[in-house]
Image 1 (cartoon, rainbow, N blue to C red):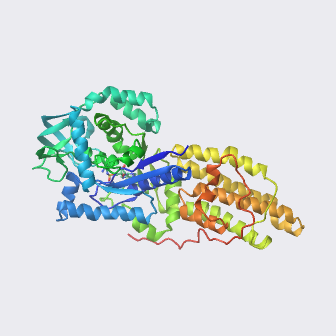
Image 2: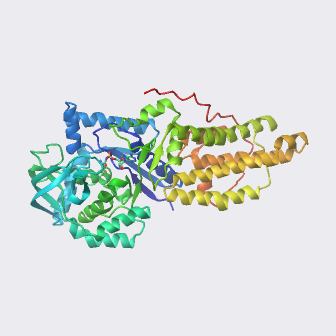
Image 3: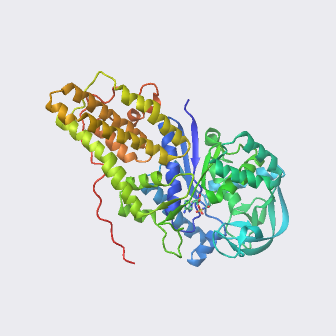
Length: 516
Ligand code: MSP
């Protein structure tokens, strides 16, 4: 049964340029979105930028700009990154847009009507980097452990959200749905936090001190706390609070995918907010790890921040997409290094998939006049391998967000095909006049390429299209067949097509030597 599938990234703060950490998250979401489309589901993939709050205001001031024009400039860079990296988001929401601001206000009013918002005087330690209050026990030597800065002391009268009232409903949510937070380790962290008890949270700031935010409905002197505002983007983009809520009805509850340091906001605060507003909690919170560069945390001070746009000037886009999805397992932290990238490029792409495809195309060209031969026999060995091992393992890995393992499965099949060629030695068959055996082999190798193209499509869409076109197949639907028709695996679909050759992964220029 086709499903409606909503997926989002966290919306990055519009206070700095995108780096490969943001990119990694966009790529994970894109891979999942494309995979869901391959399954025949209707997908709504959302991303955007988080533009209010102290962090954006502070940076804009440092650049001598208004927060609005600064955020606009940064937001455009994130939108450009999505375009350049072939990210298939259906929408891009900016929290400064009217549709969001109005929706966030409607949401506030709805929570207020539930009696879950009240006002009180408060003193606390605030980390601008995290846009979050801290307690003494969160600090290391008096500093935020993530940002290594001393938090500000804030004394204000703010509105509070009765998060504590959602202690039991949240416990119930985690109990009833053990996969609510994925992976398991991240879920356990949240369950432990829940066990230690939830306290009410401040959800507004005095406008005089922080003029850059969504006004609190009915109180001109206060603006919404940036997280309370930003979290609602996932539903304001679907039309929440507007005259047309059809997308909301169609796609919510959806999957919110986020990095590990903001798990708590998404897995505890956000579902409680939704319940308070009478809406369903998310279908899942999927939590990924962090990427480092050459073994070190990215930081402006170290000067090792990698800009995704600079990267695609240096290397082919598809190969980079492959590297990130193959090398950084969703559940863990991972590392980017040029040496590892080049190793993957050479091994997996140029000598692996690229070499297999060019061998198959050139044999078809040479031995069967450029036409994929028609055959009548089913190659049971290949069919069984695909049906019982490769595809099930691939699909299981994809559904667990382990894109690295799914690609590994596809490459096991690449290795199988290479082995098949070495074992069967078609060049000897030709010499011996065993033409029908050559036909069978080449047909099945062409069919194998169709399966491989399908498997790699979510990560390597252009490479997959090149293979499909070279095989003489026309539409994306044709290569999605293995997933749509699970009963017919190695079907006679590619026969009698004239092939064109395709060069997939050309030799790379020698890496630039960077002298620092
Ligand atoms: N604005 C908030 C999110 C609000 S969502 C309602 C925010 N922004 S952020 O720019 O700091 O981070 C955006 C996303 O990028 C987060 O999910 C974060 O985990 C991810 N990454 C930022 N740096 C990262 C790495 N180095 N590696 C992987 N992802 C990381 O938090």
